[in-house]
Length: 259
Image (cartoon, rainbow, N blue to C red; front, side, top):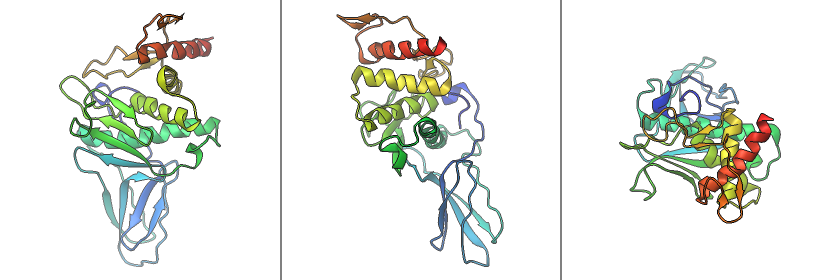
């Protein structure tokens, strides 16, 4: 996956465990990996068995609207070992987006449940959809966007101006909206501010969406370390637009974190 919390053009890839991934055999065998990516596939086969590692798993399913959904296959004779490394070349942004989307969604879910293991909805939710590489053919908001629609995460392909939005801080922000929704809170300015807060707290970095504009790998899209103050007439001294106003919330919580 892309190293750090920045766009894929702004950092090299790094190999990480593929948590809770689905692994299947051709005779109906199926299992899920552990949080560390280790798995045991029970089978009655005695000869060579074809084993497949899917791009998805117990808690998240990936759908791609660009490129081919990656599946890796290996022949193994039980009780032998089959190891898989998705996106081994780490050069195709459409494939990097698949791996990022899956891994980043799992890590922010795990971050939440580490502190709140019985969190509403999410604690027991399986197969949540993560859609990557969307284009204007699927939604007029692509490219240069990502969104949570109440039932899935949606991440756009890149363009000549925008990066592919399947990278850590964007995915963490959008899943943050799902966290907020699952607890019954409203969205709006509050949702944008809290989603930014969730992404920043995970990263330990106040800068969010670094690299959102293609190859601009230094300035963040938004910053939780900010001087925004409440305004009764325009929501925040940083502005009344929903994301700008939301920085009031992320700024308060980041200030508390620093203190």
